[in-house]
Amino acid sequence: QVQLVESGGGLVQAGGCLTLTCAASGTTFGSDILGWFRQAPGKEREFVEATRWTGSSTEYADSVKGRFLISRDNAKDMVYLQMNSLKVEDTAVYYCALKRYYRDEYDYWGQGTQVTVSS
Image 1 (tube, rainbow, N blue to C red):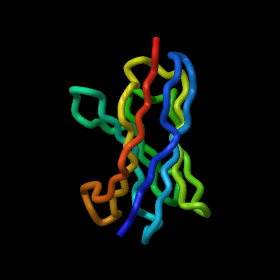
Image 2: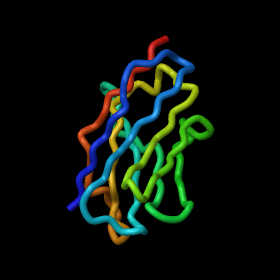
Image 3: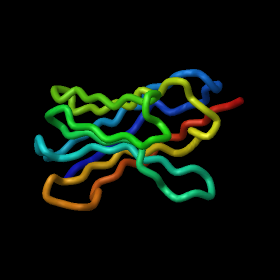
Image 4: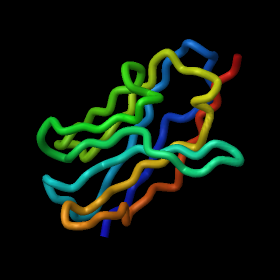
C-alpha cells in the first residue's frame, strides 16, 4: 500500500509561482510513476505531469510545458510540482497519484490540494 499526501496549495496572483509537495509513504519501486493531475470545477480530471521514482523520464501536458516542473527527492520520498507563470485557468484541485510500473492505471491517490489563481 502507498499513502500520498499533498500540500502547498493556496491563493496566488496570475503570473506568480507556487510549489506543491507530495509526500509518499509505503512500498514504492524505482520504476513506479508519480503523477500530478488536476480537476477544475465542472471539468474532468486531467493529467499534468509525471515522472518515475528513478531515472529522468518525465511527461508533461502541453498546457503546462515550459511553466511547470516536476522533481523528486528520493531520500525523502517527496515529489514536487513547481508551478511558474501561473494563469487563472490553472485554478484547480491538484492531486498526486502513483502508478505501479506493471499497471496501466494510477491506483493510489492523495486527497488533493486547492490552487487558486486570481487575475
